Length: 394
Image (cartoon, rainbow, N blue to C red; front, side):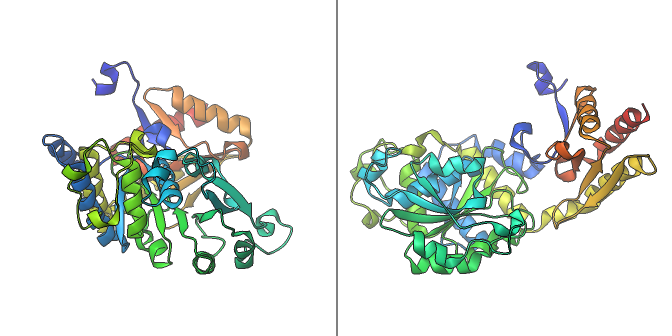
């Protein structure tokens, strides 16, 4: 019996990818072993985050890094760092920013439901630019001069949401933002793999970059990474860690937060509810080093075989088409059905069966279901194939 069944929860075969609602990625055995070992001893959490900073800096090329409780928490802590710096009074004030500078510029078409992470810190998002290219009304996107025109005394940062094509081009926006004296925050939560993206945004000049730890990296679902400029990571630490201590008795890690960098401690900051356990931090670091080494590529052969097996199921079936989608990461299969109602019905039949199989319904409105191989194991292939064949035959 599955541990989930013991508590009355039905396990699923996850063919929808590393979605939070399905628990993210599976953790490799060495990550689980490290997690169990780390849970057996106590450590100073600031010292552990300093060790994490060294690993993240080495892997990403950033000045410093930090482990957060997911990428959404990384957005909140990054925004908080830009608003407060190391000022304890400002840290205590969040999320009530009052008269504090708190405006973050963002390209209008980059607005999405996840930007609540920035707003949760008390930031006010200011939309700039016109997305004429995507709208089909022209060829232009956000341009540097629009950043210059929007910056004022209340501006604390420029936000950028990384996408597959990285549009608009990131480098000129960063150059302009820096010329205006503001940092650039990049939400790159789902932009892995490939592992080269761990360095791309930092090399482009971004000041803070957020990645999910529980997706392609293969760490715990409740982890994320924030990497970038050291002074901002220092502010993240003060906004996040347990600050209920006597300053004279606290011995912060000198390589991450020297005593000379701050004069007083805040009370608990806005990130206090974003705890990351010691075992989660260790597991994330082991997973990160594994991912950065390119270990995920060793799994691509199995993933392609899974994709091909699904494609063979829909071959020569009238009204149904299958397409392999490979954008440089794990392969996916796009299944197109005659209409939305058919796609919905098949999705529900797969989910309601035994075992339940979850396809990705993100494009169900177009009559499309996606099979994401990122979270699939080879032994699950025959189950998926048999169930899909049975449903389509009926």
